[in-house]
Length: 296
Image 1 (cartoon, rainbow, N blue to C red):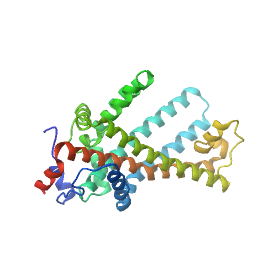
Image 2 (spheres, rainbow, N blue to C red):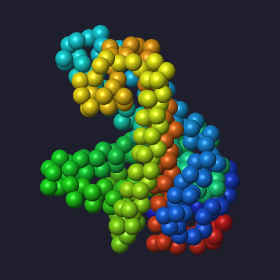
Image 3 (cartoon, helix red, strand yellow):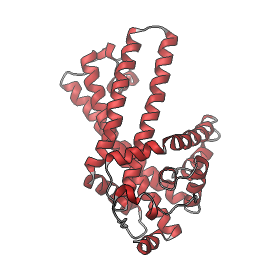
């Protein structure tokens, strides 16, 4: 199989429609930003349905792990539970992000797709996608830990940051997905960096505002009344990461559920933005818009 399979020829039987390019020109940041929110708004049910998988699985495992931590004071057992919870969260979020990315690509190409089809594709390519996520994280994280390597970590995080769709659509290996991203970002690193940072900041700010607002609202309703905090940092921790021993199980369950709903709601934003950036670079570097018109 060729490394750079044409998206126009991939999985047509899966969607049952002829792909039609939704945006047939290169996009500036305003176009990407507008597309990011308009795609989400117009296909809200599709993205939220995929995100519900993250919500349900994360909520269930979180309650079980916190219950075990609260009832078992053994340090070894507690550490094991925390490691398992973190790994499970990474696996679930990786799986759901893959499904969201595949769905957003189909939305961009004006193809019909169901949440089930997107998640099925995510599962088919899951281990390869997880492999490239781990590889990217090891390099970027390893460079960041050294402190002096932080500039290189930022450089490679952007250079290799568009690995998702090469894995899901072009069916490349993990290493080739990083090479593919390198080719797309080449000569436009600063522009891609600016767009990636902007998308991340927008997504984070929406999440932060909703999370903080819900925390204050639940506190005002008396659902998150905690112990008196010792300092400002403890106040922030209780606002965003309270424990059942501090606010009670009922309040903790409500607070955690609301927090995961907010995370589920905001998760598609950055994924859609990255998808639009990927196609924008393909149009600029590979005349992908012309290719789509020819294959249409």
